[in-house]
Image (cartoon, rainbow, N blue to C red; front, side, top):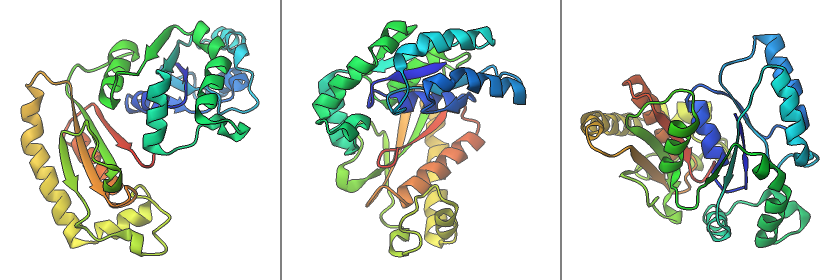
Length: 282
């Protein structure tokens, strides 16, 4: 599976979804390296059944117009790849960039954000024309996009409840799609340790710090008990997905730690379709 499209359209969510479904994933692969990548997999362990590769404008010196050529060459090696192209309306992309405050990959060219989006549409047009499917994410939230990827393109999928554990910063607002929101600001803050400040809740040193705090253990245990009680009752509902959100001041340490920890707990409890999303980090 080749995942491409416009920056801000949901490519990262799609790749993360494939990864959660046990695909072998590589992001930001230069297009001309696709055949060599396939050869390396064959040489090492044999070609995996599930592969997802992200190819887009972040590869500065790649000629995206040659994807069809490299894709055909990869096919001769036994990798018959489908190309998914993700896009969204300009206004939606502008809003998403405003929300995340991230830089567009083409801003390095000295372009304004609208100009960068327009340039990217032009540069990726050959990919769009080559695509097996074009997915417009303008009206989709993270859960809906994940669901569309799973039901439409994954080799196997489960029709059950999809769980998303999300972290966020309160100063940038509570996620609109959140079904359950837990405030982690009551917990000890690693930010005040100079050695931990540049790290995130996914780093081992931050995890060790928070694991050692009695308040954190009590908090995580109580949240886990709550979710263990009520999430199974939602399984029989008609809803397809549930978002459990954790917020802290900066969306970097405590909320990220809790989202990862509770997602791992959910998997241990037998939930198959579990993902994490760190709004201020991803």
